[in-house]
Amino acid sequence: MAEEKKKRDGFGSKLGIIAAAAGSAIGLGNIYRFPCEVGNNGGAAFLLVYLAVVIFLGIPVMLSELVIGRRSQSNSVGAFKKLAPKTAWPIVGYMGVLCGFLIFAFYSTVSGWTLEYIVKSVTNSFQGKDLATIEKEFTAFHDMGWRNVMWQGIFIFLTGFVVFKGVKNGIEKYAKILMPLLLVILIALGIRSITLPGAKEGLAFLFKPDFSKITGKVLISALGQGFFSLSLGMGVLITYGSYVKKSDNLTSTAFSVVIADTVIALLAGLVIFPAAFSFGVKPEAGMGLVFNTLPMLFNQMAGGFWFCLIFFVLLAIAALTSTISLLEVLVAYLSEELHLKRQWATVVACAGTMLLGAFASLSLMSDTPFAIGGRPVFDLMDFISSNILLPVGGVLIVIFLGWYFGKQKFFAEVTNEGTIKAPLKKVIFFIIRYLAPVAIAIVFISGLIK
Ligand code: PHE
Image (tube, rainbow, N blue to C red; front, side):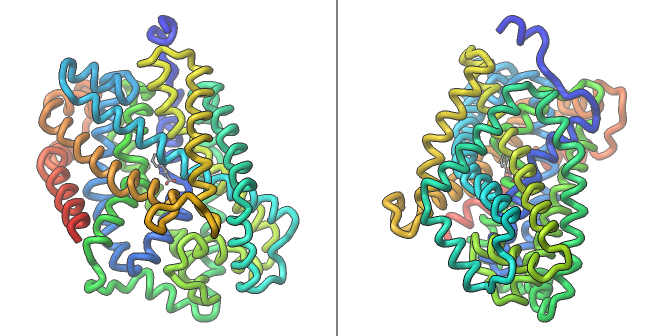
């Protein structure tokens, strides 16, 4: 413990923090959850609200978290204890830890699927199949509850293994090389998708907004998706911020990460919707929208076998850099606040996640006992954490920064104590203090009422 206090593990380079934060942000949220949400919320209208959320709320909230983390040099709970001693603010940190645990539990279910799909690609098991067959096999896979749990367990183990080895060697190395590769693959898939017959309809769905479709549900879903996709509102970027060097530029980090994450999400939309419309997969198909459309798409491509395999390997890695960040929040908390050895903290957090996560996996079977009011526990965990806890966490974080932490310290932190320029600092602080809390609250409350 004493050792850890003296020398906290940290990111090695400037690219290190961007790569790690982008690694956390880019994941299943972009490639699987984003298309699902667009599809379930009427397409282009949702996309517009989403973009507004990401630009006007995403950047300020992300910067707030990074500032809190680097200033306090502490985990998400310890940060508030240090910066606001003898107040109730650490509750925000505890909420984040709880939320991270919930997200990790259901996120690891879908992460596990990427492993199943790697096996399916290696064995070339989609080739020549029609949509009905692919859909049937996807459902059949869900019904093999324990097989889902097994993959989930393997994925959690992999995550634990990387975190076990520490921040620098673990997170940084993997993220740097592989995320750009994901971008390249998505571009190739996107080109194939938009040149399919009937692709136009999909493009219209994604880009031609019908404003009458903006309802309370759309607003709250876009808000939740924005926070989820950027890993905001639960302390990932507080924790990562605490590993950032004092000489790094936090503002440009926040911009880079938001841009990278949004580009990947848009590309995922461009891959999925034209193809889905072309093959006859309904935009409201939920999980099947991605997991059934993609194999169909690979079947239509020259070299489809390789595209399929490489894509699912990269998707697994993208998911891994996200689960690493989720686990890192839990481990940093357990080791620094509860004084567990880092190794034990990792084991405890992984075991706990496995236990809760199994319910998420098993709740997707057709005859599952784990449903509440007809909704699988998986959906509830997703809804509560993404659409409720993250935005509430986000609003509290900006209120903390704007009203408690204050302008002086914020300016000092974003300008690295006056050594670099941060030309947007005033605008961003204004958004943090006034606009963001009000906007998040309005969207959130209007969503809940409707
Ligand atoms: N942002 C990640 C994704 O898009 C998921 C995530 C959410 C990770 C919250 C950490 C915290 O896949």
